[in-house]
Structures are given as structure tokens and as C-alpha cells.
Image (cartoon, rainbow, N blue to C red; front, side):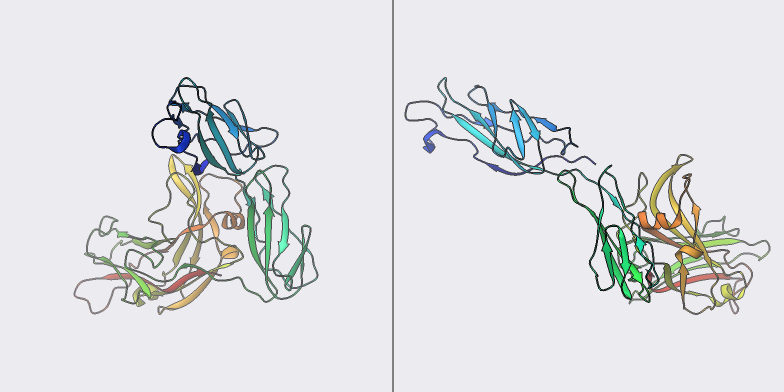
Length: 418
């Protein structure tokens, strides 16, 4: 990642001799100004290299401008070359000594010099039993040769010595992995590890529905459906979405009204994006979404219409789209995890689907060697999709004027990970 120097202040400005404001001094010399523009530049270099920036300034009187560092422990000047020594505020003055009928002048710039960025990777080992077995802690940093240190902020639950964790009591063990350095910005990752009877904190993907198009968290809602009766695309009035005024649930229905039920097939589903997302990023990783720590299950409440539930082919596919992006066959692709749930009742029922045991990597986007838990730790869940394994095309709705096969999916309450 490239940082630029950031101007955090300007001082001195144009110096008028004697500050008389009359445009000259008592001996008749004319006042002059110095134009010393903000230069911008690179971040700190990795030792033993030193990042440098070329300074430019001009005096209205035309004389030579020299540069002086007012903070030599932060930055030094040699001629017009500014060397960045360490992060902090670098103050440089451009001077013109005067002469040829002009008074001396100076202009000061203060630059903020940021540290280089780094990334620390520390994956949660998951829930652990309360016993005397020590737990090795493993973390890496993007900077070669830098050591990661571990600390516990919950010593009554767990303690840390070096890179080994000792379990003390039931509870959430909070471990911080950190690299602190003079050149690199602090890299910090905090993990909450359930010990014994403790359970990971609930992570809310969505809390409810603002409208038929958005969740309470302003994530977009996309729906789709189609069958052999409408050209495999619901372009008729057979489809619809409903949300009650309290936003507690979302219903997506597809009422197929074919001429006959012979050879009928169909599909339908809904995609729910993470808070603030209108769509997945199409040229790189999607940064927004639910970030799994020690959460091990997807939890939701789902209902089906009696006809779909009763036809015996009422399975629901669940896809979790991660922020992990790649290009496959020339097209944008996101790593996708998949599981299937067989609802146990038509009425709204709570379900919990284990992330490690029930989900598999259904789309790797051409990437090899992917590990499901590593993917969940390293990338956010940006989109959750519920779809019919097969839309209802065999059990007609009784009492209707026209032959109707209805498939209706209702999500009630929040969708969480825990």
C-alpha cells in the first residue's frame, strides 16, 4: 500500500521585512515571497534504505532558495533532497537570504510522515476444552523477520507465556497478537477463544428488514425465480416480495400458473448482502461483511408454504459468498461455501447450521489448496443466499381459480453467526 506525505500544518508564510506591510523595508529593499509547494512522497523505506523526496521552492525575487530541517531526528536535508528518517512530523524551512534589492524571506512546511503498513495474520483455533493442555499460538506478519508478541487481556480465563496459552477457567479468552515497530504501523489482531462451557459472541449479519429491497443494515436484497412456464425467468406477476411494517420478516414467493403441470420445473432464491453493500466488488476483494472469529454456526428462522413443504422436495440451499475474489474463465468470481438444509416444519422454525461440518467450498474460483476455516478467518462473509433446491412444481394450491404451484420462503428475525 502506498502512503503519501500529509501536510498537517503551514507556518511562517510570507515574511515582510519589518512587518510594516508597506511592501518594503526602511532602507528601500523590496519584500519578497517564497512559493514552497507541498511535495508529497513515499512512506518510510525499509532499512537500510532511506526514502527521499526532492524539494522545490522559488523566491519572487529570483534568488537561490536553501532548505533547512527543523526536525533532524525525523528528517534531514541535503541540498534539495529530503530524507525520511522515522515517522512523525517533519518541519522544513525554505530560505532566501535576500539581496539585489530584496529582503530575506522564508516559508515553512510541516509534513506528516506515516509508517509503512503491515498485516498480522492470527487465526482463531476455535472452542477449546478446559483442561491442562497448553495451546501453541501461531501468528505471522507480512514483514519478514518481525516477531509477533501475544498478550492475554483475560488472565482469569487464560494466560500467555511467549507463544503458549494456558487455560485457567471457563470463559472467552481474549488474546492479542501484535507487532510494534518504529518503521511499520502497529499490526494488531484480537481473537476471542471460547474455553470450556463458553460460547462465542453472536455476530449479526442482519437484524431485520428496512424494506423489500434493503436490510436494516442497508444491505441490498436480490431475488430471482423462473420456470419452464415463463421462459425460466419470472417476468410475469407470479413473483413478489413482502415485508411487514415492523420489518421483522421477509417473504419471497413464486406462484407458477402453468397451462398444465406436465414436465414443470422451476427455481427461486434470495441473496442478502452484508450491511452497506449494494453488490459484491467486481474487480477485487469485498472488504465488508461478517468476519468470523470463533463463531461456528449460521443461525436463522425459516418458514415455507405448506405446498412446498408437503411435496417432499423442499430442501433449501444455503450459499455463503466470501470477500475472497479471483478471476475465473475471464469473469469475476467470489469463493462460495455451500450447505443444504431440509426444513422440519412449514411454520417458522429456528435452524443452526455448523460452519465447519455442514458447509463445503462449492466454488474455489480456480484457486487451489483452499481451507474452509482459513477462508472464514481471512475473508468476510459478504453475502448470504437461500434458494430452493427445487421450486414446488408438484403440489398445487387448493381452492384457486387457476392451476397454481406456489413456492414461498420467509425469513423471520435476525440472521446471525455464533
